[in-house]
Image 1 (cartoon, rainbow, N blue to C red):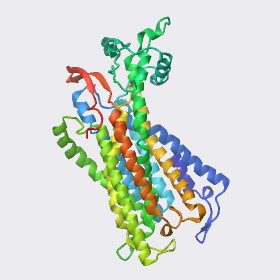
Image 2 (image 1 turned 45 degrees about the vertical axis):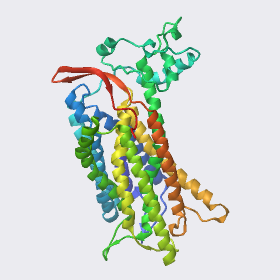
Image 3 (image 1 turned 180 degrees about the vertical axis):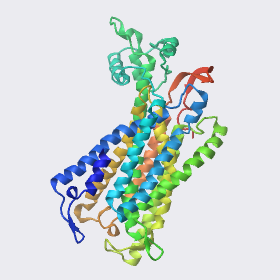
Length: 479
């Protein structure tokens, strides 16, 4: 609906400002209201689909089937591959269509594509697997457990976790739920499962599984916090990297001029090339060495991605130092003057961020899905999408604050409208410092994190082959 309205806003004459001789009049209040309504409807729709579509796709695999469980390991790699394939078409094909053939056609093509996707989705509805919710209100434990732990704060925890309240394994098997094993993290929440804490009341104490579900969310919040800076760095691709590219020589040959924004397609291209290599070569190689079905742990994967991102920022800082050197030599001052330096100097930082995304972006999406409490996988993927959103807000906030602070007293702004007369190199240096510090914070947080361990019965061709505690992977990052 939002894309239909947006297409109408750029196609119908009465919904867009009138133009004459290349000069357009100011949009009316009703035109602005219609345009922003379309954007907000798209935002609301994306908020409903993005956290759920990957979750729904992953739910099509049965964790209790050994073959499907093995296939599920590759799902997020190829799901992100298909998403970025669409993004590549948008940055290359649709940008060209919008600039040369019109905005109506540029927005109309993805609108038709969305309608076709919706039609295909409804056709496939009868054959999809629909995960049955095991509890009426899975989020209720997130409130109940901390409250119960606070009420029992003066009680002493038993020395053995087995003395905490937990239901029999038979209960979980018969109800189809999964029992989660006790972990030592966030031990203050364990007081919610103290048996004697509920004496004199009819309500039983929280179970260890309920407490562990709340611990998982607390742990994901801890990891989520240290992903905000990397999300802020990623936002540079569509902001400062593009603005930096507009100052450089963008000619390819004598006639063709590369759009600065199109250089972002190299992030997508490098990711599209790296995903098959990661899934088909890197994972099997590491699987043989570590014995982990994923090759490396989820947090190791994320950590490698963050490390590559720090290197990319370091390269961006070095390239900016080079650009400033060329500016001083050739005395480039004007905001529209072209710096005699090829735009392809920016290529390494774009490519490295794309390769890093194969590790951190896909790793984060899989981590938040995999580590979510049962029946709350959509909440996990919401952590992923919200991190990207908060990162974009932080990027805007940082740029605004740094610009205002550095302008004080008539000083030269680090980020001004004229990038040929600023200290963008100082800003990239600042980003490099906070990225490196955040990497240290991530290593600390991942060292504290303990993966969830569930009881699971695995079947092959309908025959139970094992019933054991499923440990997602070894603890934290192994250095």
